[in-house]
View 1 (tube, rainbow, N blue to C red):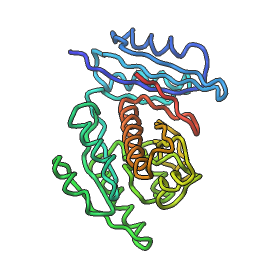
View 2: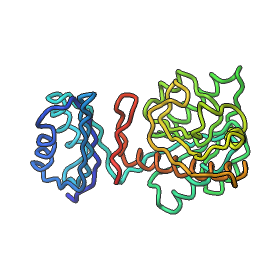
View 3: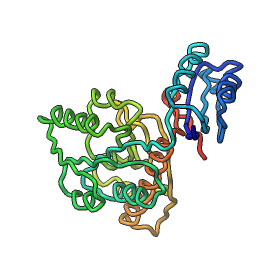
Length: 283
């Protein structure tokens, strides 16, 4: 049987013997470790590990082996074959820069995901999406129809067997119920002026205050608005010579970069949740 590559991630209480147990299990089954990273959170007393390896045995056999090992160490284990691309639903409103960036990165093969559909509360980005041959779903929303619209979102998640939902400047607040149902598999991007500059035209507000840094934050979605576990942040330095429109343009750039990195790291299972924080195992 030819070998396939897999990614294993795990977290468990921090104690001696975890690395030896995992590596011993893999070695005993003829697996070859390609990359291994680990981290012990001393404050939380929790251990995190990511292993990429080649295995000459079926995925079901690997799952059975790790299911037998997990109880001994209290492990939470995830296993995915590298060849299986995560299936992604992108949600947008009218801003197209993050969507366009993700679509291009997938086409350029620098982002190893499968964008299965795009959903929006506006029809504006249908031509862009369909130019890539991807389904576009217009799901209008009002305060009165929010519950029904979110049930339609969940129906899309189920229909397309979505692994990850990306809010690529989706200018709607998700309900607590939807946040819970997408916990750990929904990523949002927003400018980093919050909470100082809220509401409309935040870059213009920042320009009026003479800010020196602008940035963007990509994080997991939770019911605490814009306060989910942070995956990535990006910044750009500005000065008095930059106009408000310059800040807007730079802000779009850093939003694209931060979001793309967050999606890439999540897709490669390099992000592990550590309470209200994340552990990142970059390449």
